[in-house]
Picture 1 (cartoon, rainbow, N blue to C red):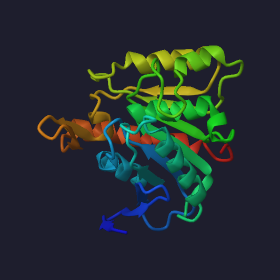
Picture 2: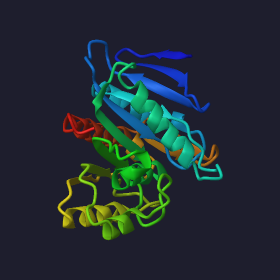
Picture 3: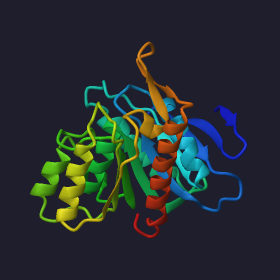
Picture 4: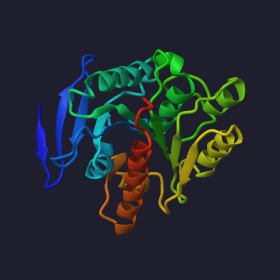
Length: 250
């Protein structure tokens, strides 16, 4: 177990039973049973570190944030590792000091669509839906990593779509996945009278999580750009608001 010190939050790394690492970002001392956020990274294998800037910002909002590694290059596309991290987070939420009744599932890019998949098809987790879902800069017209189904098709096919509140966050300057993808899901959920909100900060695919893409490294790294940091804080606040409305819904 390793730890990093910050003036207002703290973090440690634990190993889950299936062997993958998970970072635990704690809010400032004094928070009593804060909401719990399980935050999935995108398609890059084992990139939980990419989510650190956003995770720290969410922890500063007073939430307990859990960020696991998972590998999209597994034969099952990462499904087993994603669901194992969800099972671990639910089982350990109270022991880590969080409130399991305010459990928010969130994700960025491929991780976001995977989170929405759990909300729409809770049968894959024994029918236990998260209290709220936050999906960041994702798309919903392709099979997602947890259910293997297309979220937009799930909405069209299911007699009763999930009533889990969904918050979508998408940068208006996202050239990798256009913001229109999140607008499509927002409109589809709203048409079925499902609770949904869409935040559109002025930033790109990486900036929405307080990072910038480094072509030399082939991955995202923390950004110091004031505009990017402001956009990321907006994402963090969106997650915090989703958690505020999650009491008693897990």
